[in-house]
Amino acid sequence: DTVDLDTVDMDTVETDKVTLDAVDIDADGVFKYVLIQLYRSDGGSDWLVRGHAWAEYHDDIYQRTLSEAQAKGLDTECVGGGRIKVEKEKREICVYGYSVGYGRADHERTVSVLRARYPDYHIHWSNEGY
Image (tube, rainbow, N blue to C red):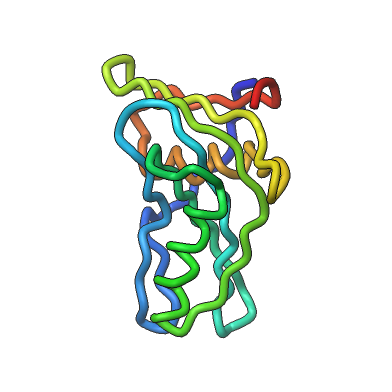
């Protein structure tokens, strides 16, 4: 399904003068990803998308991000995962599937975060596949 959500207006998240990239994914290929909620000290939260082919498990990706966030004094929660297929030459990204350990991420929210980083890509999602 293709969704038309308002895009996130930043591609970095700043909380208490600490910044993290909202999106950190491989530039091309198919890989596991996780959707992470980053909690701010003002009670609000932001969304991070992380995805890499090097990861054997979704938790490998989350644990790296968790370590980075904790080193900066930030609290996070992995709210789900799936897979991302990036076709750089076609300028297309597909978000799909689920994580056995974390469950299915809200792909619609993931697409919204990705669109802020890749405004010139066709980005869509599906609940099909693993």
